[in-house]
Image 1 (cartoon, rainbow, N blue to C red):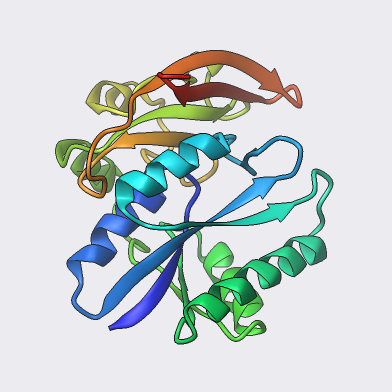
Image 2 (cartoon, one colour; image 1 turned 45 degrees about the vertical axis):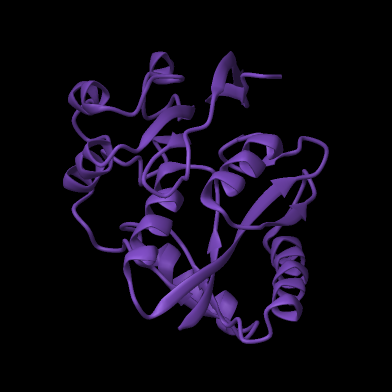
Amino acid sequence: MTPVLLSWSGGKDAAWALHVLRQRGDVEVVALLSTLTEGHDRASMQGVRDEVLRLQADAAGLPLLRAWIPQACDNAGYLQRMAQALGDARRRWPALRTLAFGDLLLEDIRQWRQRQYAALDWDCLFPLFGQDTAALARRMVDAGLRARLCCVDTRMLDAAFAGRAFDHALLDALPAGVDACGENGEFHTCVSAGPMFRAPLDLRMGQTVLREARYAYTDFLPAAG
């Protein structure tokens, strides 16, 4: 089987991509790779804490690799740090050549990833790409995936959605024009349970703060902490 490294944000799409890849007979996800911001110790866009990412990886039964990027990071700097992390991964798994993503719809993002990672001698895999996101969102919920909204772009969705459970009630309440999976950046999620995990995570919800006068971030922490 082809070994695969899965880009891991801590959210539902990455988690569902793991579930889908594990149903296939031609690939094996050997590890998760998260991009974190130095000084914040959180997933760079979603804001999921490093300690929660580690709990998720443990629940998935996979090692968690990290690419650390500075707080002020341009594209060149991002790719340099990713190249370092991918080089470390390949030294650990010499046959590793494929990086998987949970992208759903945005063709320009897919093409950008393919170009950038081809230059680093990596292939890209998009197991969820092109699916009907409205149907996919409900399929996730019906299969037992449990997540909450950890980041809301308040220019696209009301801040009151931050912290809400990703469930049928939320999907019913989303305004017209908002993608059911948040694929246009409307929201991001933090996963706590699902068929990709050996056991659910016990997380508690912390404060919600507004950053950059735009993004409403809801913090999630291990309940024991």
